[in-house]
Amino acid sequence: MAVTRWRSRPDTTARAPDGGLDVTFRLSLPPSTPGESTIRITGDRPAIGTSGTVMAPVEGNPWLYEATVHFGHDGPLNYRYSIDGTDLTSKEFSVTTDYDGQEVDEWVALWTGTDSLDQPTIPVARDEWMSGVYPPDFWQPSFRPESGSVFAAALDDNANWVAISSVWSFGRIRPDPVIESRPLLTWTVLTPIDDIRDQARLAHDLGLKVFLAPQQNPEVQTDWREETSRAGTPEWWDR
Image (tube, rainbow, N blue to C red; front, side, top):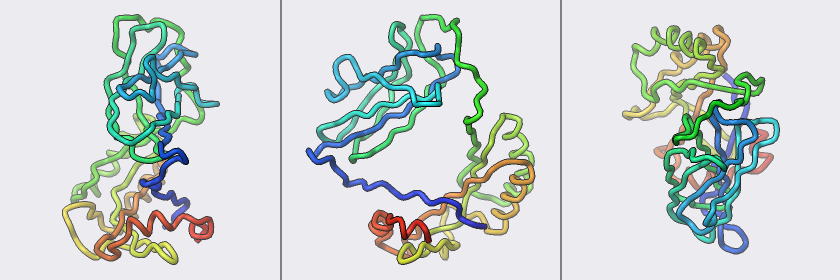
């Protein structure tokens, strides 16, 4: 197996020059949302404004809206999304704003309210849509023979990806990133490497793409959090 892309952890201590922090909220809409709707985020922090903050559609993706809000400090936030000109809202969400550059990804499965949504909707089909299935994050021997039916069901639901619980960990972060099996067996992710290979091969044979998430190895490297944050140079990623 080969790692085709790495993504770094964000710097959870970052602050904007004025000491505040920018948080980007990204919202995925349900297909019932009327086209060209004005979507607004409202919340219980002054930074969002008394009437909320209008979100902008992401170019090339009519289902995805986003807005960046500048907060003066960190702390908890309770918020909702709504459609202007209607009484339609999302459920209430909660998040702790922690650091500059934080991104919050949400989705609305169903708008609630009395207004009707019998209006033209955004077409359901789109080339760039990606959907995936995340099976249980734990492992037991029965997962291996059952994987075929699980992956087939994912395909029936038009999934493109499947996440396979991974036994891999960062065995070393610097100077080069090394992925290896965990030396300790704990109650968490225990999938044997041979099962990962078999499941990945089966998923690929069915036409699914595979996502694996290596987990840190704190028993090998006690300062892995700090090291992961520092290992972000272009030269490091190229390795």
